Length: 103
Image (cartoon, rainbow, N blue to C red; front, side, top):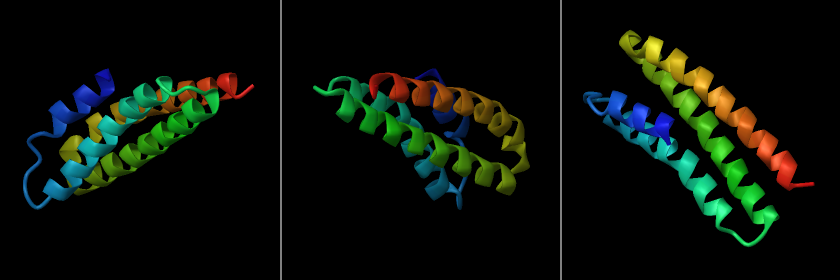
C-alpha cells in the first residue's frame, strides 16, 4: 500500500494530454494491494492464488505504464527507476506466496 500511495501522490499533477495514462497508472497501482486484500478474504488457497496472480499482473502493468510515462517526460525517470525496483521485490514476494499456498 505504501508503494501505491507513493505512486498516486507523485503522479497526481501529471498534465494534459497525459491524463489517460495518469488515470491508468492510478488504477494499476490501486489494483495491486486491492487484489491481495480481496484474495486473502477468499475461502480457498486456490482463489487466493488467483487474486495474487492478478496482483502480479497489475504490477507488470504499472511497471510498463511508468516506463512509458518516463519516456514521455524525463523528469519521471528517477521515480520510475525507484518504483521499478520496489515492484520487482513485491512481484517476487507475491510469487513466493503463490508457491507457498499452492502446495
